[in-house]
Amino acid sequence: MKNIIFKEEQRFTQWWLWLILIITLIMPPLVNPNESSNYYLLISILLLALIYLTKLTTLVTKEGIHYRFFPFHFKEKIIKIEEIKTYEQIKYNPIFDYGGWGIRYGSNGKAYNVKGNIGVRILLKNGKKILFGTQDAHRFISAIKEANSSGE
Image (cartoon, rainbow, N blue to C red; front, side):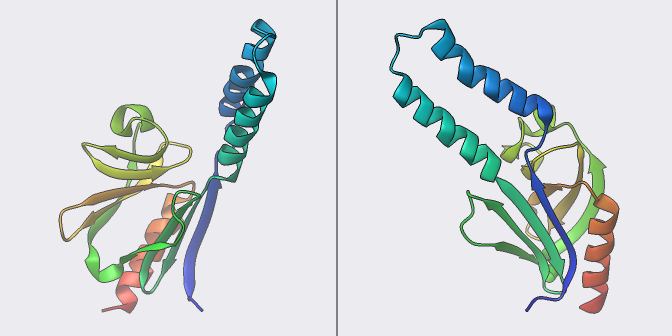
């Protein structure tokens, strides 16, 4: 069993996101009731279920940073502590810096974000940059420091 120093699970819980989704899903059948509603209902339910089930889990252990963006990652991924060159807390704009939420690619590297504008940016020794959006950056950073000091 892993010795977990930090654990965070995040979901898409923003009220405005759900409002936009619901309006987008209920408007077409109201505007054009002659369309095939069974097909539309099925697509709507699947889309809502996908967003509801999506979850970003980040863990910090002495081994490294473990992460999984369910349902897009079937298995947990890991960044080993010895692969990390630097890490820092940053404030970012999800839309302008990475093009939105989710698993994103931008000029600043790869991002895993669900909500908010605070993250922990990791620079790997191979030059790659990875951002993890977080609701508790202070604890995330402290956990990386603790894991890093235990490996020295």
